[in-house]
Amino acid sequence: MEQNAELLMEIYKNAELERAVLGRLIRNSEDAAFRSLLADQFTVYHSIMQEAHDALNRHGILAQEYGPLEKKPIFASIALHLRIDKTSSHMAEMLVRGNVTGLIETTRTLHEAENEENIEEAVLQLGERLKNAQQKHMEQLLAFV
Image (cartoon, rainbow, N blue to C red; front, side):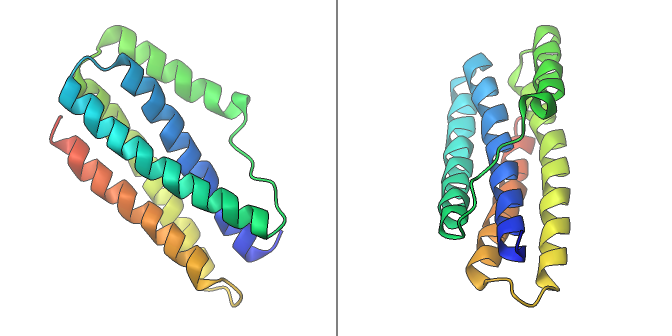
């Protein structure tokens, strides 16, 4: 797979996973302000995911999400944590921990891509948008911890 498509696939999968996790937490949040914040973040990740999807289509590549076996441990952990504590503070802490992992992956992928010759500027910019969104969202979530 060409370098642009590889980076786009990573962006797509990362944004899709963030969106999927937020969707589960939105349904379980009882705090209207927190739920609103999560919905706003969901919209940002959905937009990035859609842009990556469209760009992959332009490259002739079918977007691939993380598979059920990759998501199952994440969703099982979320379900277990929510049984223990459904407060906004606990959900925010869970999201921050997950965002750190996503941010590390995004940053690593972008650093590798920046050294490649044929990476399109638009693809790098979309990756930077994802990275900036992850950082901003962590800061917003820390207010609820």
